[in-house]
Amino acid sequence: MLSFRPPPCVSVSLRKATYSYAGIMENRAFTISTTSEAYLKQTDNFGTAGGRDEDKFCLTPVRSKLVPAPYVGEFPVVLERKLLHNFDIGLHTLQENSWISKSVPGYQSR
Image (cartoon, rainbow, N blue to C red):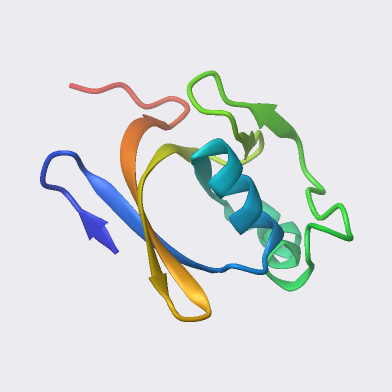
């Protein structure tokens, strides 16, 4: 879910049992990377393997300079997010995040 009213936000829903959820709650931040066609096979592994027991980060992790979370170096778009709110919705939580920055290689604003 996207909201463009200040502050612009993205909401995501995660199960509390996931490795990602624990990292987001500990760091109060995360990144969202958008893949390109060249990395579709590697990206599919992110959604099928658990990160707690298996290293599913088969591409290049890059440390964000803005939030305590890595992003994928090969991916063309990165959103760096700071956790604003966390809502319990049963087995999942809904996490609303403020927009820290957007990185699009080669993009120049006009």
